[in-house]
Structures are given as structure tokens and as C-alpha cells.
Length: 274
Image 1: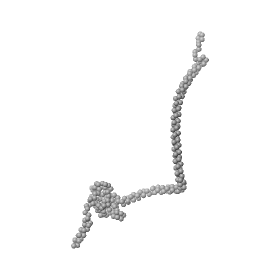
Image 2: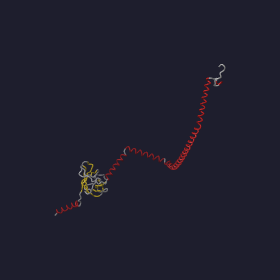
Image 3: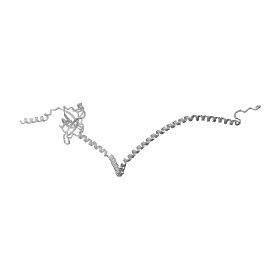
Image 4: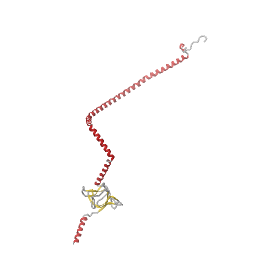
């Protein structure tokens, strides 16, 4: 009787544990590059927040101890595509941790097993805490680079220069205040000067136009004067040249025969017996 009771309890326990869950599961591998603290065997696997399976095994990757190798049992009815990624999800600060699956693309191609692995491998991505830790590390490294010896000296020098500039401004704040008060008047005077300059430029432009017209008229008058005066001048020069030629001939005759002055250039009349 006792044996029958024990057998009944075992049967009921098995029914309660697996009797209501007759789903068929398909196994997948996930390699995590961060600690999986809070995750354990039988932890839930959720796809977009919906339970689709559980974690079957957790172990270090034999070929790379920096990675954690997870075997997931996922409902065979769920289509895991090449666009699915796995990451750790924590439910609040003190809540349970589970393996979350989400799609980063609209791909409908089912994920395929690789020759070197017994199950298809779902790519992983950093969790929120992992990304936060990485970002904090990057910021810390950047701060260390900024605050190295050389940059620290430059920052110190810059602060000293700023302090000097602040001191100069404080010492001359009355003059600066007076200058700022006079600034509107200076701007008005500047606008007036600009307007006067524009007017002067306009007047100079008009004067240039008038001078250009005058020069054109003068050029025309000079051309006319040249046309009227040059021909008579040329005729006069020719006459003067002819006179000079004649005078040169007379002078030559006088040098050869001075008597030409008394009797002229005609031959004398022959006398008796000549």
C-alpha cells in the first residue's frame, strides 16, 4: 500500500513537472563575451519578452575561456532567423536575469547550423549593463588621456591665462562699461560716414563721366584743327624749302664768280674784235 502511494506521488510529480509541457524544443548555441552573472540552468529564454524556452546548459567555451557557452532549448515552432540576436536581460536592479532574443532585421532566412558546431549558433550582442560598463570604461580611458602630464600642464596654463584675462576685465570694467555705453553713438557716426562716402563716390562717378565727355569733345576738336592746319603748313614748308634751295644756288654762283653781283648771271656783250 505504501509502495503504491509512493508510486502515485512520483507519477503526480512527474506529471506536474513535465506533463503540462509537451512542447518540442530545438537546441541553439550562444557564445557570450561578458559575464552571465544571475543566469542559471532552467533560466527563461524570451523572444521579444514572450517565453519561448529555457537555458539547458551553461559552461565556458573550451577553445576560448573568455567566452561563455550557452545551450538554449527553444520552442521548435518559433522560427529563429539570421536577424535574431541574443543578450542578457535583467528584470530591474534586483530582478531575475534571463536570455532575451530579439530581431534586428526583417530577415526571414532561418538560421543554419555550422559544420563545426552541433547546433545552430545565435549571434550575441552586449547587454545593457555590458554596454554601460564598456561606455564607462571608454570614458575613463578618454579622461585619463586628457589628464595626462602634457595635457594637464596645458589645461593649467589655459586656466592661468583665463584668470589673467578675468583680472584685466575686472580692473577695466569702468572703461569697458563706458565704451559699451558709447558704442551706439559710434555705430550711428559710422553709418553717417558710410552714407557720406557713398554720396562722394556717386559725385566722383558723375564727375568722371563729365571729364570723359570733355576729353572726347577735345579730341574731336584737335582732329578737326589738325585737318585744317596741317595742309597749309605743309605747303608753306615746301615753299620755304624751294626758297632755301634757290638761295643755296645763288650763294654757290657768288662763290664761283663774285662779279655776278655787279652784272648778274647773263653773259656780257662781246666788243669789237672780240
